[in-house]
Amino acid sequence: MSTTIPAPYLVTIGETMALLTAEHPGPLAHVSSMSLGIGGSESNVAIGMQRLGGNAVWCGRTGADSLGQLVRREIRAEGVTVRASEDPDAPTGLMLKERRTMSTQKVSYYRSGSAGSRLTPEDLDSSLITGAAILHVSGITPALSPSAARTINTAIEIARLASVTVSFDLNYRANLWTATDAGRSYKELIPLVDIVFAGDQEAALAVGPAADPADLAQRLADLGPSQAIIKLGNKGAVASIDGELHHQSAVPIEPIDTVGAGDAFVAGYLTELMTGKSPAQRLELAAKTGAFACLAYGDWEGLPTRSELALLYQDESVTR
Image (tube, rainbow, N blue to C red; front, top):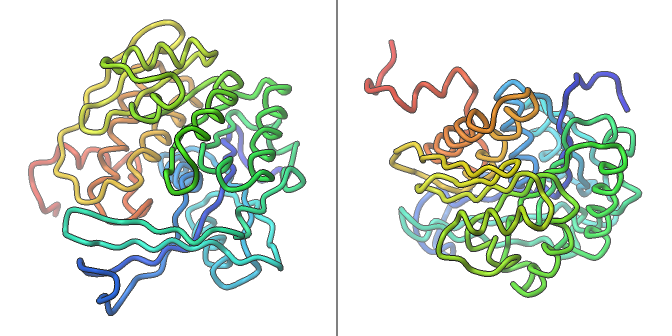
């Protein structure tokens, strides 16, 4: 492991893709211009933590192509340490984001056979994981391929043997696998981790539906994690942390783009966890960062620094 990564740090593993976003609402077939960027849940969390003053490492695999160069450069430019191998035989994955109306979006993935889906346990740096304070993974990666699933299992095993805290965001993607397959995978992984994040519908895939989100948090915790957090969007969050139930109110906002809000929430929570903050402080920052991410277009571009969080409560629209 390079000694240039300040401790404590978070390691996250997953696929980040190039992202083409329609610049105007309407059917994609009639859009004349698109902007080029990047997007990926795990790198979103890494960037979010870095902006909040933490230290993060993103590990993945890209193609040996211009889009892969874009992915690595953009993440590195945010101060995140990048440990990504280049695959000469597979392209960097691609997302297309269609703004069908001003208030709705549709995301399409072109990641079958991508470099990121070809992630293998051999891509892992064991010393990087064992030296981390937190390993964060998501349920997206196991859905990409059998080798990617093995990679996540191996990373978790390495972390557990070294007593590294393991964080897992279910992050269900219906266009990657069925609810049944996802639920089966979640049930295998949740008992192996210390922290689990989920939306209420995602949690139901693993533990069955419940009218009260607090029941979902408790059921997830009963599977093994000491911290189970249910993200509820504009209704806040509920969590079972070390046997105690916590409720967190949402920050009132008028959202512009909710994509990436869940990743921002996770980044806020894990940043405070890594610096020894209380459960209430973790949830409070998570709610703020999740809300702030909704106030700008893009998967990660609007993630806040700590000094910007006060803007959530500012009455004046112009600062001079």
